[in-house]
Image (cartoon, rainbow, N blue to C red; front, side, top):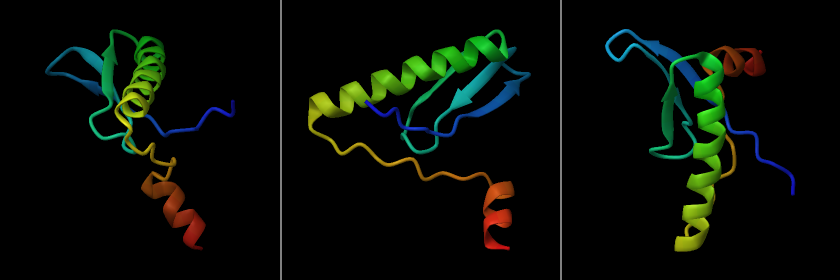
Length: 77
């Protein structure tokens, strides 16, 4: 199977003292980790779980579409 390439936003939360990872294309799909690498690994698992749950419920799986502003500006040029 060709794995979809969903964008993962990764940022540090001072409030939580953790790295936060969210997947904009998959509503509500987010996780965290004490290191960047852990947050990214957890995000990969969260994506798998999100897709599996959506399929089981008969929901559509969105295509990866999110593009950070830096890429959108470059693509528009």
